[in-house]
Length: 227
Image (cartoon, rainbow, N blue to C red; front, side, top):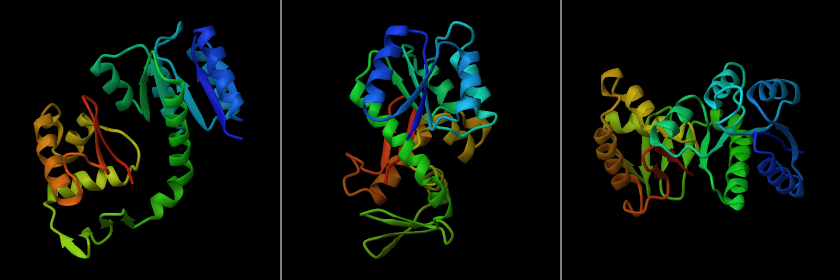
């Protein structure tokens, strides 16, 4: 049974989440504050955490940073904070997804299932050297991309971007993180670089670059690879 830790101080919302999750055969623990959340995370070892940022005793970002000190459990941030910089801060601190209130319960449950699936498949993904989609394949060792039996030439920068995204399937990688990893510290705000190179990758790999299936943009936040 998949165990979920809900970290939320709104008792009514907690009740709704618990009812919906338990109805779908999840085991649920609830924490009304950050200190309780950290204690339950260590004691119960949940498979996924749903985390509010506005907690009474500490900021949710601090809870997230504390969790990332010892666990890679998927964390879905569920919060009323909508500002882009808040989203980026949470994702950079280690959140796997970011959902704003008010929200659709069906969407939350779908994102939760996706987070659990990614965790379950992670060991195999780390051992995979060839990633294959319906439209192209990527050999991570040979640094070779093929599409419909033909080699696709990527520039070193295009390859770096693609490799980072493919090695973290389903996970949102922030614009800032990609810029730091590929171009370095002095390019942390040059988001136009990303737009240009992601457009080039899509033209080379996507069947319909204007409606990408694999290289997905999360507006104002970053990019993710969906297989």
